[in-house]
Structure formats: structure tokens, C-alpha cells
Image: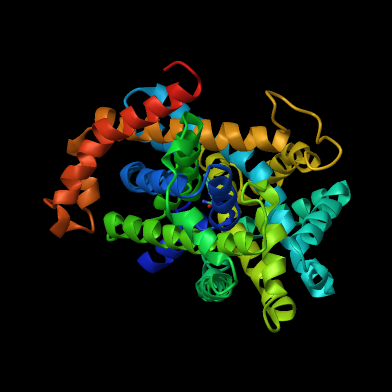
Length: 453
Ligand code: TRP
């Protein structure tokens, strides 16, 4: 069967938006604040930023590069570029990781959708104190139908978009709506910073207490850097496979990283000023934003009526532009390698992922006491995928480009669309990082975390 011509992004701008849409999501607004909160604040934030710059950016460039060079899904990419077929395992791990991540991500995506409904019903207007907000969050989650139902709805929308192709739906949508999310975050920051007691939040976020750092903290920071940039499972590789040779990978990657980091820091500012001002525990866990933000909204004129529903709508969209990138990896694999139609791949494997997600949804109610290695299904899926599989995937991608594929192939590919950067200093830095620094750092952190080192 002759392969149909592969789809392309409309423009370089379209790619940056889609990739930024993948990167910016619940990882920035939901996960970053609560993980930072659980890990002592500023010191964690510092290590996270370091991981983003020293490990994240080089791996992002490597992933986009492999994708564009091969024009394939992660498994097909290694089949095409690698001399040794064993590298396909790195791509396969990405596809498996996609199933795991989307399974728990959709639970949180479902929460944001559920909160849109609560906001529109006016129910969030009662969330006037952190205690009430926390009780209400727990009460909603106590109902498995609420969690599973919205999770299924979130999956449904994700699948519908991926079936329809990305270019004309979500890409256009996010172009319009992402700037609005940015503005709302800015408004939330202004409100947060002007609350009495907000300075404690700023100190928590920006003045480090180094004694709080443990090996676990560093692993979390590394995992967060991978998660927030959508790295380590071939999502950026797959998006890169739709990129044309005229586009400059370097400048795309830098813009993606800057946008993503900016949004995470903005979310941190909005959340922590409020958390401290209203006396919440920064280590409040996955419910953190759902228990703090409604309280701030209610302290703004019109906040509860206008900003709250708008915010949760936009967060839902940010989450959707990320979840479609996870599903796209899975679908691209079955379309490219198994010759399946896009529609069939979405329906079958979206369904499988949805079923795999049910235990994560039940972790907040019926199965809250069911634990493996001391973690609920939700926590375990997040931990294994984000903190182990993503860094491991990133390690393999870096090793492949730097040690197996060879600079004589990688550098000319990188120079496409970026002729004038051919001898730039940052390419030299990138080579050193990818060849030595990235692998060694990831290995040390991983080995340390599993107790070998
Ligand atoms: N980066 C997204 C976020 O911050 C999540 C995400 C999308 C992702 N695609 C991914 C994470 C691929 C890991 C791998 O919400």
C-alpha cells in the first residue's frame, strides 16, 4: 500500500503554537504549583529551572530533530534512522508511556471540565474559604460517577479532535484562546499579590531553603521538567515529524521552552500568594488549585461570576491541546506502522486508554485505600510515567543522537532552515550537553532515586 502523503503544519508559527499547546497544560497550572508546594518551594523551583535549561532544551531539540529527519512516529523514526533495531524499543516505550500519562491526565482534565459546570451553576460562589473549597472538592470526588463521567467526556473531546486532524481545529482554537489564558493568569497574579499576607507566598516561591532538598526532590524536579515540556515519550518527535525542512528547529525550541516556563511561573505566582494569604497548606496535593482558586475568584469583583468559569474553560482547552498530543503519538504509531486508518486507531486506542484510566479516577473515591508501593493508582501512574519513563526516554533519545546516529547526520539536519546558525556557539554547547551532561545527570538522578547510588 502506498503511504498517503504525510500531513504538514500550515506554518512554522502553527508548529510553535501546537508544540507550545502540547507543552502548556495541566503540568504548568495544576502540577507545577502542587509539586513545588510539596517539595519546599523555591529550592525545588530553582532545580526545576536548571533541569529545563540544561536537560530539557537540549532534549527538546533532539526530539524535534529525530522527528523531522524521519518524518515518522517514534517507533518508525528509529526503524528508519537507527542501524540497530533495538533503538525501536525507545520509541515503543514512548507509545506505552502515552497510554499511562493520558490515563491519569484525563482525570484532572475531567476535574477542570467539572469545575466549568460548577462555575456556571454558580456553585463555586460558595467556595468562600479554603475549608469549604476543600470539602466541596472532596465531596465532588467522592462520587465516582462525577469523576469517571467527566474523565470520559474529556477523552471524548480529545478523541474527536484527533480524528478531525489537528491543523484546523485545535490549532486555530488555541491561537485565539491561549492569549486569553495568559491575561487571566496576569489578573490572578495582581489579585494574589495584593492580598494581605501574599509576601509569604513570594518568599516561598523565590527564597530557597536548601536544606529541604533531597534526592527525591531532584527526581521530582527532573520529572516535572520532562512532563511540562512534553518530553521523553516522543510527543515532540511526532509533532516534529510534521515540520518542514525550511523551519529553524532551534528558534522553535527556544520559544516553546520560554512560553512554557513563563506560564508555569505565572501559575506559581498566582497560586502561592493566595495559598499563604488564605492560610492553606502549600503541600495540599493534587487538589491544590481546585481548592485555592475559587476562593480568590470570589474575592474579586465579578470574579466568581465571570473569571471563574472563564478560567476553567481556558484551563480545559490548555489541557486538551496537551492530551491530543499524547493521543497523537499513539495514533501516529498505529497509522504509520500498522496501516490502520486514523479514525479506527483513535476509536480503538482512545477507548483502551480511557479504560486504563478508570483505576486512576477511582483513586479519589472507591479505591482510595488500594495502594501499590504506598501509592494509589493515580499516584503510581504519574510517578512511573513522569519520573521514571520520561527521563529514561529522554536519556535514550540523547544517547541516540549523540552516540549512535552521529553528528555527521544530526548537524546537517539541524542546519536545515538554520544555515546561519551552523557554527553558532550554542550548537557547540548543545553537542556537549547532549553527549555527556544530559546522560550523566539523568543517569545519576535515576540511579539515586532507585537507591543504587
Ligand atoms: N506538557 C503537558 C503539560 O504540561 C503534558 C503533556 C502533553 C505531556 N504531552 C505530553 C507530558 C507528552 C509528557 C509527554 O500539561
